[in-house]
Image (tube, rainbow, N blue to C red; front, top):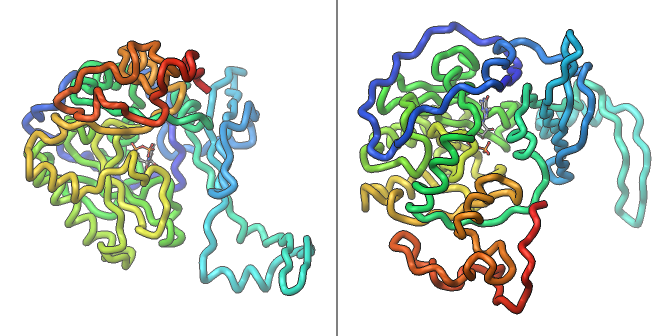
Length: 385
Ligand code: M7G
């Protein structure tokens, strides 16, 4: 996958190759390189925005002031490739507000009522920046990721993980070349905020590409671990506690030092499921309602560490809940395995309440959710959006 970064990469010093003992739970071969990686543009090259043809609007958000666009890029030989463009109006910066009020262009009254009035204001170009995130060439999976869709909750037992999720992510997950580029200082080297170079218990802390670093309100950084054998929360055991401790302590210290934000104002968490299966930890400003920070996806790092202290195999025993978009292939796999009964109106998949209880999901066998309808309440499977 090609990602256009705003600044050229810094010194390309390769990090030492991690030589950790293979994690007990990190099964399966490393994901294969795919076609989209091979075709990605060299890191740091600029993107031909002007030649993009608009295919469709995947999603827009009035609240986030963002549009997710499917575009097509026409190459020199006339070949067409897909791209995802995310266009976002950037947050206000306090020190620029006065300038904006003084130097605005046209100001048009929209409505006035008693002491209330609204206007349409045209700011000078340099104060009306738009952040553009480009994914090119984009895969079908990228297009799906940003397409507005219905979302459903999955409750995944450890057995589900081994039998359904793991084989799926080994065959289909997003390329993590961008992560290796950061770890090997081939991209974003000049953005690194902190690094612990230890191959087993070290990590790199960089600003997330969702954050433009102009204001602290939406502060967002990610810690990417050096070792390459931990895909997600599911692989974590007590063996990883020193690594997690380093991320927590050094990550907080580095952010306080660089940005003046105290640890008590940081939300530090992992996603399950992540989009990218190379373990990473999210650091966001506590006051920022970051995408993916809700209870069905975010797991606070300190809670994860406590769970591992109490039981080294906690994440290889318990059931985990996560959201999936309606037409994600993983959802289909759960449905095919009869493990997403709540999606079916009626007992088409053997009945929503018919599963025997599982050791890692005490709720299984019990009526699970409000969409777990009785047979007479509706017979049609829900169609994917
Ligand atoms: P995730 O939990 O795997 O998936 O988080 P999500 O994208 O669905 O949240 C991966 C995180 O890495 C996200 O917060 C992304 O914004 C961030 N990210 C993704 N890419 C491709 C890049 C990148 O190239 N550079 C940086 N700095 N961050 C990225």
